[in-house]
Image (cartoon, rainbow, N blue to C red; front, side, top):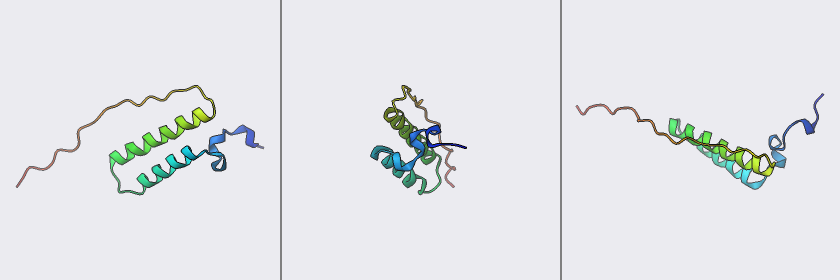
Length: 80
């Protein structure tokens, strides 16, 4: 049998702080947009941001690093 103490605070929506809630709302808004790999990247980054805020609130001494990189998009078709 599990108890509430076995799970971190961040898994309980009622215990989240305003910053965590707002980041989740931003992530949800991006997910509601059309499908695009750039939006997928944004969702992943927003998740990392929320986790960093949660780590701060929970006093977890951990840093998340995001490696910046861009990949070229598809080559547009040649004009006819």
